[in-house]
Amino acid sequence: MKIKLGISNRHIHLNEEDYELLFGKEEMKVKNKLSQTGQYASNLTVDIKTEKNIIKNVRVIGPIRTYTQLEISRTDSYTLGIKSPVRASGNLSGASRVTIIGPNRTISRNCGIIAERHIHLSPEDVEKRNLQNVKEVSVFFNS
Image (cartoon, rainbow, N blue to C red; front, side, top):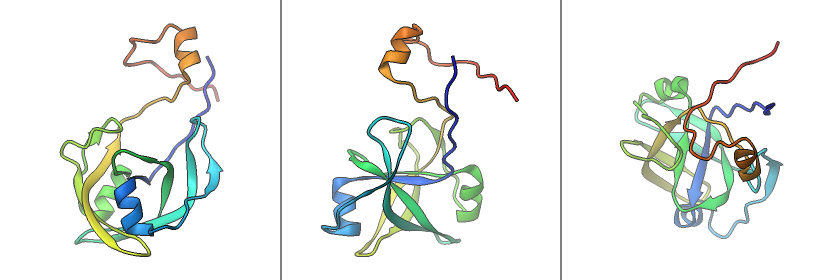
């Protein structure tokens, strides 16, 4: 099976409450569609700050979610001086506390994780390849 490879080193998903605190009534617009159906890189960015450092212009991914989650790389965690856990998306257990700076407000949340390696497949591809209960696969690259 061929899959499209995509790498996202850092981005943030926001819940409705945090979105409104950071951006008020500003509408989130699609900058680029992502390979995952319904997902997109928005026109909006935030800055992420810790006691040690700041990373500017972190892309907000849409649409709005039920949780706020910052996904960073291991290198970003060193830059920020935090020890973010490796987690599956949505698992914020032990997530690092960061300050999120938007145009309207600054908020602090325990939301920083390093996302586990994963593959996005459509429900049709999962069923077609009989992967419903498969947790791990091997991936090979042709060069």
